[in-house]
Image 1: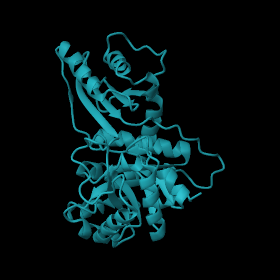
Image 2: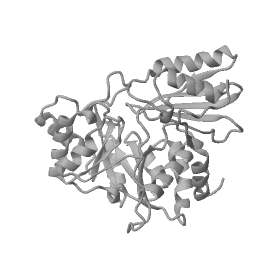
Image 3: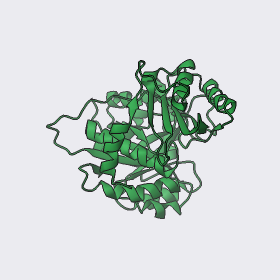
Image 4: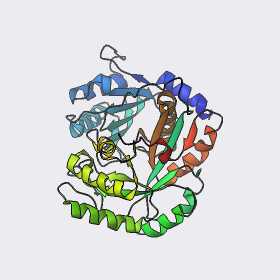
Length: 358
């Protein structure tokens, strides 16, 4: 495998947006997927087509779906298109849900392997990095969902200390994991459960922040969570696609974070999130997620997502990537992150990417 620097250049060459006038070969897998995406409400300017990593031929199609997109209808239509050709494309689970990861399909269509990922956001166009910027490009990596296993701490310690970890307050071993991770220089965040959109399964778990809660309830739930994840220097949302879109609830939360001197990372599980904006207004230092590393929790997909994060850091000056404490994610990052040295991109903890309050 080529070094990440070379891989980034390759991604920039091969990745492409499909403008409305682009017309792939008729009756190909690509043309079929693009036509179905449009039929169910996703315009071509929101679709990215790339070569399928690790395969000879084939395509990976990422839909940055608008809120009106008919996800269920699209999934059924893709499955039916493959079935009608005597092939098979099936829906598979996603590692990141809660409003961001909407669907994943894999299989064969029109004689070639395909992967389709539907995301609940538009790909952002961040401003280019200023040539006179004082910092080299910086990349922060945050791993969510720690707290279920104390044994995972030893695996996490294989990663550079700049990699931060967010600990759930309602998992089986949350308190012990938070203490162990916070004993060194690694940044620990409270991975605060927040209300998702209706129907999200299995949900954020008990003790979460919900729309309509009183200031006293928000304070009590935050106090309870911080008593478990006592080493937290900041907080990010676990799920929360409904909660982070609610301006009143976010104002209550940010007031509490400001009083405690904690920073906030918006995981951006919904394009409707106002959390980052409200943090700045209330006076809380904050950052927001640019790339999810393991929406598809497989090594090649994680490498490609990391390449995108590096590319984003080079273009905009910084990027924040969020993954999870899955073994495959840790294994992949343990190999790839040391290769950043010499590429000009510096790995930093999230606290070094925080935007000061306005």
